[in-house]
Amino acid sequence: MSHIMMARRLVGGLRRPPSATCLVSPLENLSLQTHVASSISHRPLVLPCNHCFSSAAHQEDDPNSTIVELPPNLKFDPRAKSSPFYGVERVVIEKKKTKERKKKAQEKKKDEQVKIEPSSAASVDKESGEDEKASDDVMEAGSEIIDEEEEVMGEYDDDEEEYDSEDEDEEEERILYDLSTKPDVARVIPLPQRLHVPVMDIKTGEEVGTFHLSEKTFGNDPIRVDILHRVVVWQRNKHRGKRNAGARTKTVSEVSGSGRKVRPQKGQGKARAGHSRPAHWRGGAKAHGPKGRVQDYTTKLNKKVRKMGVRHALSQKLKEGNLIVTSDMAVPSHKTKELNVMLNRFGIAGKTGSTALLIDDADPNDAESEASVYGGLDVNFKVASGNLGKIKMLNQKGCHVYSMLKFKKLVLSLAAVQSLEERLEKDL
Image (cartoon, rainbow, N blue to C red):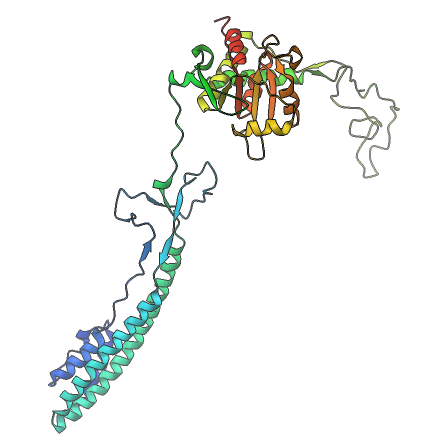
């Protein structure tokens, strides 16, 4: 068999998938076969890019891991309280340096090629003249095969690099959260321990004692939301009251104007009109207007249901942990600045404080002077709270469901607590 035919057979082997087995041929020189096969098979294995997380406790295979990935098709704002990731710390992903790995792989490849070439050259020098010609022809064919296969593998490597870059981009977009950093949710204190509340001093913000609330007034559980809704609707309708008393508009028969036909029925291209007093014309009548009757929006609600709504509203505030009981609501000064400092100790008013409804039932006989109490409220406290937009002060007789639900915190004095319990439990 001629050397040319042998080279053609070797070149024809490229039609099959590139591998070392495609070079198996009846060559007499085994060292040459070893050189050609090793030059093709010694290629670095390209592995997908791995990532390391800053959290050492994270293991993807660990079923007890607290690391959770945010799905890309869901959009949550972790700053929103309704988000499941509210207050949870985000896991930072650190990407490895892929360029250094590629450089090291290329250097290894060059070192292997340098080691193989001198060994193959020494083996070729030992052969005879005819073997040298045959080996030269085979080497040329093998070099062509290697060049073509390197081009194919180079394209394959480029594709792998593109795929790796796409995978890296996808992995960079991963958003991970550590659920172990999620703050604990506030739990409701069970009954009857919930009824045992501390008594605070409004001036210093310190605890001065404890008080046990009545279970009938503050211990209603579960909360009847339907009763609260009925009471709020009744209060809003009552506030709306009666209006438009005496308002009266004119109909088509009452408004001034002739009854003659304004224009011909046909021929002008305009809409037909019988007279000049329709409701959609300027100066015409008013359709469906008031007729002088008083519009009454008030509704009726039984007194027992109203009291029940107040009891459930008080129980809801205690259940939320937004009920504050104070010894009294007497302040030495009418200055708003001093009252604002006192309320800031309880997280009320100010720029970042919450809204609050303050209820008192002060007795003039218990006050230092009768002039300091008016309408069951401390005069200095009422005057000082007038310029604070986040608080409202009421007597216990004016305590109603709508205001208690509107404001976040409810502040009661001991006198107001005793009066409310006595008034709301009277018919029970």
